[in-house]
Length: 353
Image (cartoon, rainbow, N blue to C red; front, side, top):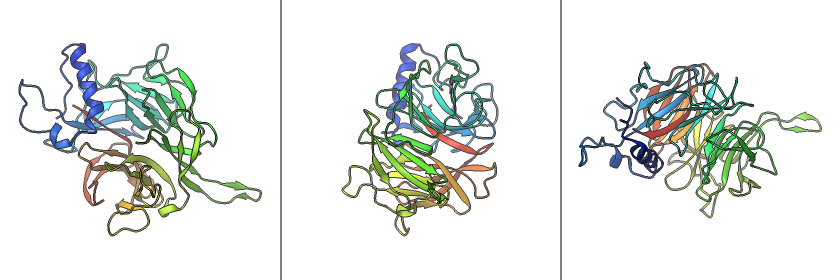
């Protein structure tokens, strides 16, 4: 069972937060083990945090190498898997900030971005509003589907239209970051190994002089310093791309993308490769398909420190039920249903215990 980190003063909390940033580059076996290290410190493991869309909460599950992988790991005073209750009306993307707190995109209702206390805080899961705000509200206006933190430590968020950049401590808008071509509906947002910003964009009604001509899904790339539009990284239909959603980088620097229409996770060559943006299917697959599970619609992604791929899914009928699935990060092989999520899962994020 996951537990809150004992309070040992500011220095201890700072160490834990620093480890959270480093954990995703450390082999999972090295940070979640049975033997206690010298000095009696608790072994460092990772838990998975998931936004429950219709449950309006954030849930926590024990990590992949815990004694009970996928078991509920509630915050103190909570039950089931609940880490933070009543966070927003319709929570979507989640991301941990450099401060160790959890930021939640809200698709619908009051507050575009919410904030709750991280697991290393004195009150894990508690609402942390911005000054002058109530409940967990950090950014009061609009809505958001995806958010991420940039190399500058600032918070980037998008729903449809240009990506906005915020001061994470106060929620103040710094600027409308992207410029040039605006994304359509965007539920994937991620900085790449090249330092640039990647956005999944889905336009459900592409217009011309005759009216709506169909839909268009693509991955757009923006300059990581200026926000200028650099071009389309993966174009419509490439490798089967249809309705792109969550984004994640493979350990080798390629790009994973969920596609709800195809019911699959796709893989494309990363920006450092000569064939950047080209389909990179798993062995035995076609197009760009890397991983798939029958009768599910994949939505968001997270990569464990060990390189396994975790995928939030809903049933193909679009109902409220949903699960987090676990795949081999090399072969795309389905490994297990990791957790069943109350209210249907959306955003995923790992964080050390």
